[in-house]
Length: 158
Image (cartoon, rainbow, N blue to C red; front, side, top):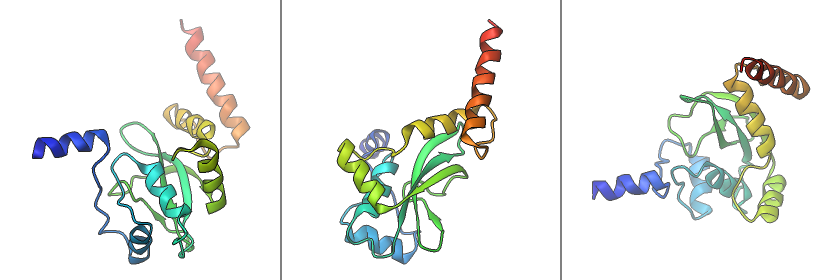
């Protein structure tokens, strides 16, 4: 039985505990009639935000979080500006992020027919910046310039 659970966890089909979350978020998850799953941060967050039962006004957030290496991740934010990670517990340190409203989530889901990042290009850019030690809070133009400069240095070394 434990081997089966481990295999499910590796494949991302295992439910994640959410008892630690505040009541208004648990209520929204239950009304949305789903169980958050491991390795499904985009799906988990977008289902909460896009659901008609999102009476608490949760918004969708995607960004880069700290791990062994910076990873692309998503979570939700409530009306008060409090961030809640439905997939990872404890929530990792947030390095940079963008907030999207319900309409943006639904538009992206309609366009792609998947639970996927809204702005994958920005996420990849920020993940690269953080990995190279570049401040992701700099203006986008400056981040791109610094990434380009780092790659020039790397290429000139070969």
